[in-house]
Image (cartoon, rainbow, N blue to C red; front, top):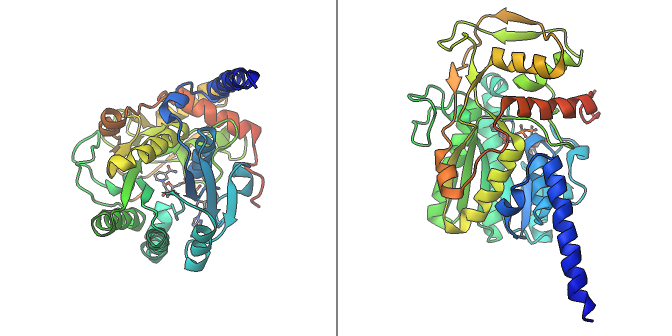
Length: 366
Ligand SMILES: NC(=O)c1ccc[n+]([C@@H]2O[C@H](COP(=O)([O-])OP(=O)(O)OC[C@H]3O[C@@H](n4cnc5c(N)ncnc54)[C@H](O)[C@@H]3O)[C@@H](O)[C@H]2O)c1
């Protein structure tokens, strides 16, 4: 009997050491202290998608129990962590959501599932002003019926179409750049009111450009619209060249400047925000606080991949602001969050590693 505690301590130390090695291999040695020891059952909608699947990976590494709800319209079954329970369902179906809450003792929700294409939202606004909003509403209504009051929302920098000041703080005026951005604004307002009426605790996380990969999970969208995976598709020979939209912006090299945030840093921010909910609702802008131009991204990718990455310069695309860079000072000072992978090189290297090992992504798209 006396040997048990020793064995457990030994096993614990071994596990901690192993975990540290794994975290280090994934590029972060700080997550154990960030997460502390929490265990809670979290429903992750969109957990088969790009950001959701990496967040699930981090939640599980931190001992949370996870249920993923996804309709696989954009997500991939192979991206879902094997330790998560998977329910294939659509958030437009209230009965399907009800079954999840009836079956699982959910204590918190992270809501990633969404239509996400700014351009598409300009063509088909009701897919966004309708579907995105209805899905959020169905989910929130069911949560409250089951007395679940912790909610983390994937919001967006598309709330800030023409910012007055760069970097962009949470005090910037909200002017959505598209029906997509507007759908997130409506969801944020819904959260505000549900806090007043029902005591919901929420975190609205407005991320700038999510980028990079964990060793096992990366970006595989169809169609792909994000700059870094498009650049890497050229490096992999899957595309001949890249189109750049405009080199006459008021930026140092004339191309648009964006703030890239590594998905592991984003995942950390979700977990920190979730843990802080019992102290109150919160809204944070999430980025590196440093912008990189399209040409800087290409130049960095050239160095990392050794490929020339040819591009064609075209005219501006409607609706692209010159510069979007986040001021993440609020989450840093309130929760101690700091990006661990702020260097563009590190972000692109992690994405390149994943894309080279998964040249056809998860291999489930035609
Ligand atoms: N990728 C970015 O740079 C970025 C930036 C800002 C905000 N966001 C937000 O982050 C979230 C995740 O983005 P992502 O890039 O991982 O997108 P993604 O498309 O990879 O993931 C979204 C997931 O939601 C699922 N889904 C969509 N509609 C659904 C529905 N009705 N019912 C059930 N599942 C559904 C999809 O199958 C997919 O797995 C989105 O809410 C997006 O608006 C993303």
